[in-house]
Structure formats: C-alpha cells, structure tokens
Image 1 (tube, rainbow over the protein chains, first blue to last red):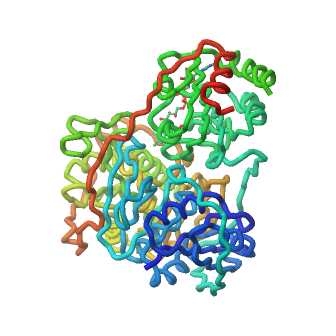
Image 2: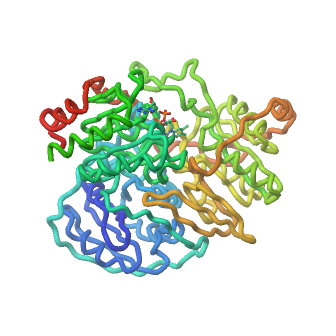
Image 3: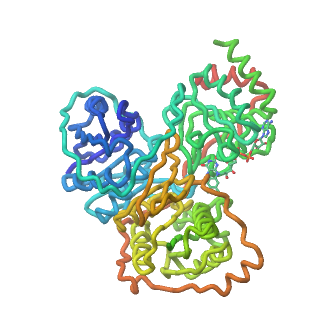
Length: 312
Length: 249
Ligand SMILES: Cc1cc2nc3c(=O)[nH]c(=O)nc-3n(C[C@H](O)[C@H](O)[C@H](O)COP(=O)(O)OP(=O)(O)OC[C@H]3O[C@@H](n4cnc5c(N)ncnc54)[C@H](O)[C@@H]3O)c2cc1C
C-alpha cells in the first residue's frame, strides 16, 4: 500500500511544509505519492517531483480548485483513496480544513498534528496545548493524518520523478470563492523562519510594531504576535503564534512584551533558543527563556537595534 | 431558520493539567471544567443571529457524561432557546461526535450548525469538518465574520496567509475562530430563566450510532521539560551571548 500527500502551495510555489510531511511519510515506510490540486499549478508539480523519496506526483488542475475550497477538493481526494492506505498533509489551515472531511467520508478517524511516527499505525501527538503527549494507534484499514511540521526536518530535493495528470471530479457547487486578502510580506513566513521576533500586549499599539520590524529586517526574521496583540488589532490574525494560531520552532524566538500564557507557549516552546524581554520579572515566559532580560521594551528594543548595528 | 450549536465540556483554559504517570492519563480530580472557549464564541454568534432576527430557533447540544448538563445550562443562560444532551460515559472521538450531531441535525432539520474550531483538550480540530462530510453540505472553518445574503451565508475565514471570504449554500457547517465575537456573560436573571428551559435527553442507542472507537489511546505522557530561567542583565550581554554562546545570530 502507499501514502498520498496533499501538497501545500499557492499555485506557483510549493511550500516547504510539504517536504516535511515527506520526511514523516518516509518513516511510515510505504511508497509516497504527492497530490497537487490547484489551478495552473504545473510549476508546483515540477517542484514536487524533485523531492527525495517521492515515487510519483499526481496533478489535477481546474479553475474550481484555485482556492482549495473544502468540498470539491475533498471529493477529489476521496476518489483517489482506493489506491492508498494513508493520506497526509501538513497541519496548515488547508490541511485542517480538508482532511477531516475526507476522513469522515472514508469512515475513519483522523490523527491530527502528529509529532512522531512510532509505526505504520501508531503516532504521537500533543494534547492540552502541548502539556501532554498522547500515543495513538489506529484500528482502521486507512489512516488520515495531519503533520505538525515543526517536528520533522524537510526532505531534500534530489529527485526527478514522473508527473501524472488526472482529471478533476465534478464541482459539487456548495460554496463559492469571493475574495482573499493575503498580506504578502517581504519577510520569511512564520512557519519556516529561522528567527522570529514576536510582540504582545506590551507593545501597546500597531505602530510600535515597526520597532520589531526594524530588528526583523536586520536579522532576516519573521514577525509574530500573541493573541492579545492580534485581538487588540495591532497586527493581522496570521501573526498569531500559539495553541490556536501558528506553531513555530525557529532557531531563535524573541518574545517582547509577552507574558507567556499556556496557549502562547504551546506555539513556540520547541524553539531552539528563546529570548524574553519583559518588565515583569515574574512573567511565566521567563521560565522557558534561555536568555531573559527584565527591562522596559521601549528602552530595550531601540538599544537592541543599535547593538545589532554594531556587530553587523 | 434553525441553528444548532454543539458545546463541549473541557478542562478550563486557565488550568495547567497534570499527567499522572502511574495511570498514564490526565489527572482530572477536582479540576475546574468549563465550556470550550471556541464553543462559547459559537453560542454567542447564534444568539446574535437570533437577536438580529435572522434565525428563529437556537439549540445547544452537548455529548458526554451527565455533567454536560451544566455546560448546556450555561449556554441556555447565555441565551440559547433549549438544549439537547446525548449522554455517553466519556467524550467520544470526533468522528463519533460528528455522527451523533448529524442524527440531531436530521431530527431537528437544522439549517446551520456552528461549532468551535477546536476543543482545547484534545486539540483535534475535526468535528465540524467531519459533520459537513456526513451532511454532504458546505463548510466554512475558522470563521471571523458571518453575514447573510438572501438565502446564502457569507463567511470570512482566518487562513494561514490572511483572510478568505466564501459564500455558502444552506445547510452549512461553520466553525468559529477567536475573532468572530466576544462572548457575553450570563446575567443573573438569565441564569434563573435558563433553569426552566427544556433539555431533551438521548442515548447513543436511541440514535443508532455505533460507539466503538477507531483510535486507541495507548498512553499519555508528559512532554520533555524545557530548561529555562536563564537571565541576562543588559542588551550588550544578550547580543554577545546570542552571537558567541548560542551562535544564532
Ligand atoms: C481558547 C483560547 C485560545 C488562545 N490561543 C492563543 C494563541 O494561540 N496564542 C496566544 O498568544 N494566546 C492565546 N490565547 C490567549 C492567552 O491566554 C493570553 O491571553 C495571551 O497569550 C496574552 O497575550 P500577551 O502575553 O501579549 O498579553 P499579556 O498577558 O497581557 O502580557 C503582556 C506582557 O507584556 C509585559 N509588558 C507590558 N508593558 C511592557 C513594557 N513596556 N516593557 C516590557 N514588557 C511589558 C507585561 O509585563 C506582560 O507580561 C488563547 C486563549 C484562549 C482562551
């Protein structure tokens, strides 16, 4: 039997999260195919065909796949699943939206956000905001799995495998795309950045985030935020790091004016090095920080910018 | 139009849970339980839809042990019209929950089901999506805005890159994100009124749903502990350490 991976992409570029799922799939050990669903997305299929361990890329192009609406995309995946034991995708908003719909149609339970593969049917996944790790075994013939990409390295691109073009399934026409507001930043994406600087409620305003932007530009970092900063409207929703936002694990995470609630820690505590800048020495963020600085951020951040100028 | 809102009883979001290494399970003795925060947002949205005259009836549904009645009462005190409790020994896995909800959707002929985007205990984020598959209907996950356009529903969704807006046919399943609304507190008079509201009760057998789980939880462990607590005195020291000790800049 084989594993089918739903590729994450924007019709132009394949996302690195797909390479990470390949690494997880390779631990399961079955043949790996990648499924690229989209519109005018042949360049994505070509990129996918380069990923090591992949035996075949399937591409299905159709206008109604452009925005990855759950209903037509899950219908298509279901139609292909007779040939596969396992369906996987990264635990992105696309994966989370689409895979459970496929699982229920196949009458199997899904295993969400695995962080380790024990064997073909046994996996580890965090529960309770990462405060416990559950080992789960499936009892069904087929498995549907989303992957927490911070837990796996990206598979390399040293391959050149075949690309098969398949036809679309019918559009069930249950929903219709209206618009997308994508904030297309020049900076690296949160989930793949090597360095992240995040601001919390302590930042006091959206304008003050420009202080973090300057540091991010110096370090080639992405900018993130706590829920409180997003709720207050300082930054848009896609900045949110945490249990219910993005899960990140960069080499360096700098938390500025963030208290360190369980829900925030859930999204960043696997970072290699954590820096916390907070004026309250009792803030729980210091318990996970390798380098904590008790200071007013409005003094510390300009100073940090200066100091970085000195060393570069 | 009828709206159904499933609500889950979970460990309160302020509680830091403990793993009992003996039994390899979560220690739930004397722990504060509450309505899943995302479900509160779903309840609030249903109430607002009713208050603005866009829907006629709003029903809260909970699945789990008898204490789930408290969670339903809570939803009724916020403003839901009536409740349904499907009593099970413990909380079943999402696929079974979706099947049970689907039976109630059929019985009640609900037009819209609004659920939380994830439960903060198992963090699965599956039930709404699975329900939409069983209902063979449209789906909008991670909603941050819901409006109506004639007989269609327009939902803005929080996605990885930003926001996406889609238009859905009814019946439909919507799951809530954090920015959809801010749930109200139940007022004392409404808490009193809620005591008189009706809660219908079912058992899974009444609904002919097979409760056999498809997943086995083999064990639950504590995650590896992070060694934190290190301090620096100045920004100069910080930058020096990041450069020379950690080697990350
Ligand atoms: C269902 C649910 C899901 C959630 N999901 C998430 C999630 O995904 N991500 C998330 O982050 N949160 C999430 N939360 C919210 C979480 O519980 C906290 O409320 C939130 O993380 C707090 O954000 P904060 O640290 O920015 O704000 P606060 O807790 O208010 O902390 C602000 C910090 O800034 C410091 N500060 C203030 N001024 C300065 C200054 N001048 N200089 C230095 N320091 C200063 C303060 O000392 C304080 O520690 C969720 C909550 C719920 C209920």
